[in-house]
Image: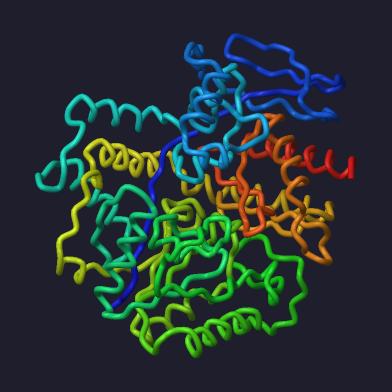
Length: 489
């Protein structure tokens, strides 16, 4: 029996527009009502920045509460965690989105390269998906699995069609944390074992159970959680103790030396050796599961040696465990080469009763079904492959030029750029330096993410509808932001 589980979180949509004057210390921002001039937020405004790619969509005029009101409510009525996770010293107040573009309440346009943390797959407010949502809202808002309704079954059949045989069973939940909670339960029921292994630097959720799977101090609390969860060394071929220039399944490799003979990977062997140490010292002879993201997301788009997961799965299965692929950020064609990669078990779950009030909600299923159709019709997987490879290739040229860019990695539109003090030490670039570059990129009209155990990696995971022109605009913005920081340093 092939043993494994998959967690996946589906798509949505994207945005953008700005332009900087060529020779003046002012930034020309394109607004819905026309072009206005505004003093640049940058201390050293960039020269020769290309104009933001055009967008024909005109957003609605914003007429709701003021920015000051929103911020006051956020501070006084929302949990303090809401303020803690707010990006940027000067927050972005988002009003509307369309495809790869977002507009703030002042009408300024941004190119969205973070896509709601890699969940807005086909673009913000994609017309086809929006139509499907409106149609379903007019018919049936909500009911549950105690009744039978068409949208759940339509989506389940479409989704299962994307799985390799014999994997044809789905169960809908409301969030990634909830899905992984359930995966832990199913793995333990199915195997009759308890212990679970994850990779250091991973993120698998923030519930009391999945907090044990997550291996990143920023997401931990000083309470008992995740009993029976263990970690093994993340096989990070850039930051880890072992790595070379042929390890990854990616267009771009690390700049580390490699003396491995063809077909061999010493780094992979060493990281597998670390896993074997965990088997020998930290868990019983029989385990329940191994959790792993095909490419670490929150951890900073970390890629492993090519054969690492294959060999890990073999060792886990030999010990009675199932292999659970967390596909929240890599699924639905984002890597370009594959829709996703996983295997699944489900029969033991039916021994008891598990009920989910909103899992498989009619509106959610109608939207998800439309997203799957749109992925196929719009060719977003091929876009991910083509535009993603272009981005990776060009970013690698920046890595070769700038001492603070240590690593460029990823596949398709799942990209990480790791920033360092210098390439020799590979020590993370300090938080204040990361923030400066991050803010400058935003001020020039592009939104990206951050990740990594030390917050040292820029994450580029846009809606899968972006164009090469969009990518080139971001590349120009990123180069200017890095160059601006280097000049000041």
